[in-house]
Amino acid sequence: MDPAVILGLLALGLAIAVLSSAVEIVGPYEKRALTVFGEYRKLLSPGLNIVPPLVSKTHTFDMRTQTLDVPEQEAITEDNSPVTADAVIYIRVMDAEKAYLEVEDYEKAVSDLAQTTLRAVIGDMELDETLSQQKEINSRIHEELDRPTDEWGVRVESVEVQKVMPTPTVVSAMEQQTAAERRRRAMILEAQGERRSAVERAQGEKASNVIRAQGEKQSQILEAQGDSISTVLRAKSAESMGERAVIDKGMETLDAIGQGDSTSFVLPQELSSLVGRYGKHLTGSDVAGDGESLESLEFDAETEELLGLDDVDEMLEESNGEEVGAEREEFDAEMEVEERERSSTHE
Image (tube, rainbow, N blue to C red):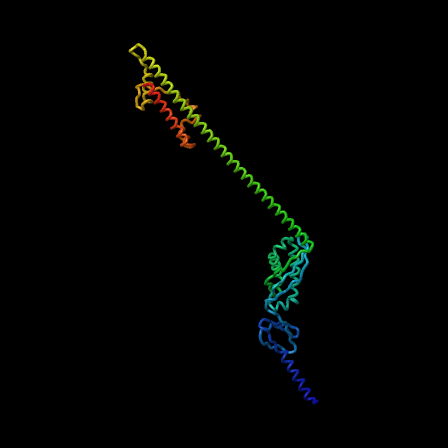
């Protein structure tokens, strides 16, 4: 082969290599750190960049949000309970120059720091807190990562703990504790239900006893009212019969006086009143003497209060007005017949 052709081909290849090493095309979401002969020069912006050929070297940084998976970590809580936990961290390179100059591998550095911080945060909390306060864990890890990562030109945007899992032994103990707590609550609820049922039964029996007692009391009151009314009627009958007996006795005395030989009689005022009342009973007239009328014996105040004579009419209406009225009408009719018979006999 012709040496000139070979040299030409070599020159062409060298030219292509020089041109390719002198051109750097940076993506829209990237930045590249440029070094020449190992010396840091600048950051290459997105687009076409010309760099010294063959002696330049670039390091690419993705400026988008990146996700770092924190491996599962074993930790001991403050109350000496072993747990395992893992997390996800969202980071973004804010200063590519610092990320290149201040830390060897920012992703590995952030991941290792997150693992250490996760174990430390869990170690400062009790088991129940680690299971129920994951937002608190996220916040504390975020705060612990902010300060060192700022020096690396990296910002931690978010920290999310995915799970906190106790060991199988602890899980078994927690399940037993939960079952015992549920049994305890069930027993409490059952006891409360029984107590409430007993209270309801007692209240029902109390109400029943009150109603029964009220019924018995009402029955005794009605019975007493009936006895009182009967006593009052008997007393009124006796009163009326006593008054008529006095009148009859007085008439017999007048008859005996009239059969005597004397033609002049001195009648006391009481006898005049007696004659007037007798005439009133016989004829229904308004004959009355000037003096006081003959009154039958009356009940004293204590007896009247005991029998309830002041409220006789009201008691009669409340108990059985019609029946008592009928009995009184029948009694008055009998007395009227008796008066008429006596009047005809005297005539």
